[in-house]
Length: 242
Image (tube, rainbow, N blue to C red; front, top):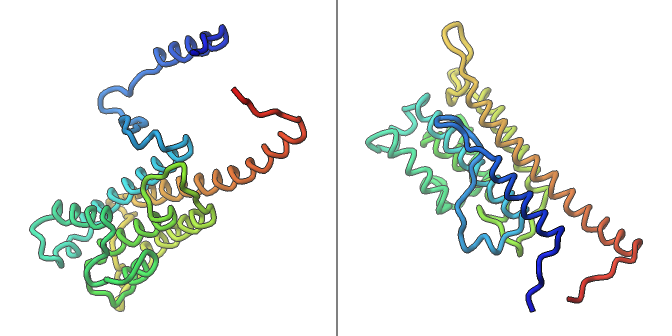
């Protein structure tokens, strides 16, 4: 038997339709929030799973932006690979991240291990590829090795928090680590009489902010489970049977 909609339910539906009608898309050329189209696997995701999935997606997007910027400021790095151009080098690193295959000269290493080697003054490989891959692998590892989260997944807020601190440390080292000649290992932010470029700092800040938010939400989610259970006992809430 199909239940007929109640007056309250009809009112809620009407309100939702009105709110949808009031929403406007960003003007052409204007940036705004973006989500994904519907897909079958989303039926296996809770609201929080969707939030975390979008967090990982946007953090990888920020890393890809950093990858492009770092290659532009340090073209010698992608030229070490023998690839024909900048775009090919960017796509190669993106693919490596998506399939989680580390740079060939770092086979057997993972996440923070790769990150540490990429910032070693003695490393002679493609430092940009290693640095960005190490950051991406660190973030993915903190999410149980996944970029899409489902109802059966359980995340550890401490690991996500640690990933945020690792990104923070990596950003600081990128701006300060030098080789034996006193030169920066990689050029990133620039502040001079001729130019000011803090776009790297903004991307790092966005990544750290997203990770910290998810870490805090994970801690709050665990706390609320216990509180909700205690409230149920206290208020003698019965569970629905139909």
